[in-house]
Length: 67
Image (cartoon, rainbow, N blue to C red; front, side, top):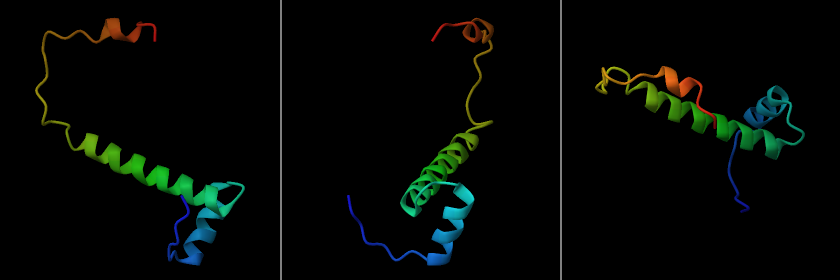
């Protein structure tokens, strides 16, 4: 999907240099993916202390579970 966006060229250049991606398009796509991942992580982190813990749950068998 081609989209015309007004993006600060200095930001694109910085992302391109820092990312090591082969093209500016790839660098911007990587930056967007990382932005999404951080926001999703922050949302999960916000749940700490808000969910009830099941005292009967044993997490140890899950460690050895084959995926």
